[in-house]
Image (cartoon, rainbow, N blue to C red; front, side, top):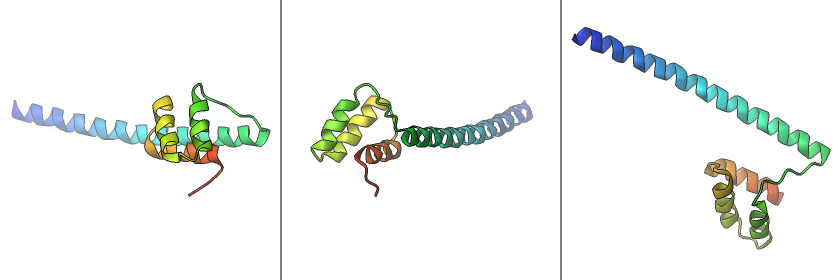
Length: 95
């Protein structure tokens, strides 16, 4: 009985590790595709505004970058790094 439980546990751990690695690869691929789509839109001069982004833009005009990042995160459910990069692109700055 213990051997069967142990074997099952090993299989579950291996499957979980495999799925986690695949998910990370898919997330990286998705990020690359999003960057490429953003570059294409920028090259064509097309602005894609999400609903509610007016508030983020207004905060940037008021030089309230941190609040703009927080607002962006609330609107899009983005993580901190993604939100920071997006707001910096909107603001036209880097770093």
